[in-house]
Image (cartoon, rainbow, N blue to C red; front, top):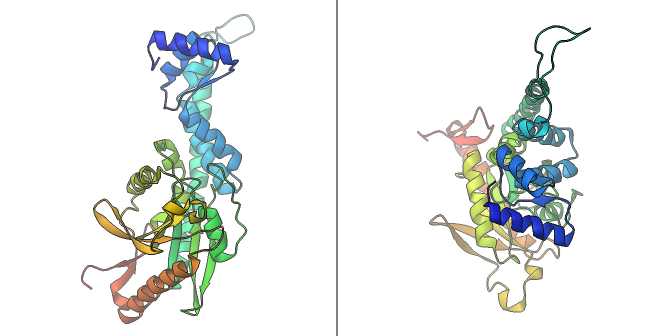
Length: 342
């Protein structure tokens, strides 16, 4: 049951006292653990993955986002069929029916879900192919690409709107952004535009099924020339959140892409925690990473951020102009890469 029988009885008593109608575990439960807990507690039991999927389903707006949520939901549900249909018996032959044993309801549903998963994956492959085509076009146009990443509710969408003057949905809630939004940002210093993408937020113990399902969205981070790692500076647990984001980046193969730490929400910091310098560095995995302090809400520090982006974009463009043969395109990600001999 994931917990001992005594603890289960304690949970049941507490749920009865507060009038709860459902038990939610902040852990991932196996199907058998979930079934045993429901029998013992005599009420619905769900886990962390289920809650995240429910939030994702409410937030998804685009066709791509809905497909990703549907795939993750189907993969999760396919492991829970034993619990859902354990009360149904095998169909049997009889008068007016075919003779011999039929399929159990669980077998029918497993086959139907398997077919749905296959169809959804095929549709997502088409979406991924379209995104790769768009990325290759941006690469051929020598557009410098930037992706905003970070822990959920760190203020990525608010910062995105402030930088590119967009109207992407932003709210003080978990996973307000599920669908990748890409806009052009004009840099007066370069007299040209760069591409900026807002991506889904990360969270601790992100289920692997969700990472797999959201590969099309996370692909924007994998193919970026620079990652703006947005951090909620007002959250005292920000070091743990940075660590969780780094773990997800390693899982999707984006941990080697250059990063800029953007400590957001300095307007929410008390006077004693205000930064002494707006630009410094922060150590991640033994490496000093440049850090900027900003407030996407009040626009403090955004001028420094634009100057940093202009400097990085100028260096990348200069490298491509001076050594055009030294820069190639990664076939899978569409990101500009340097040839080892250059």
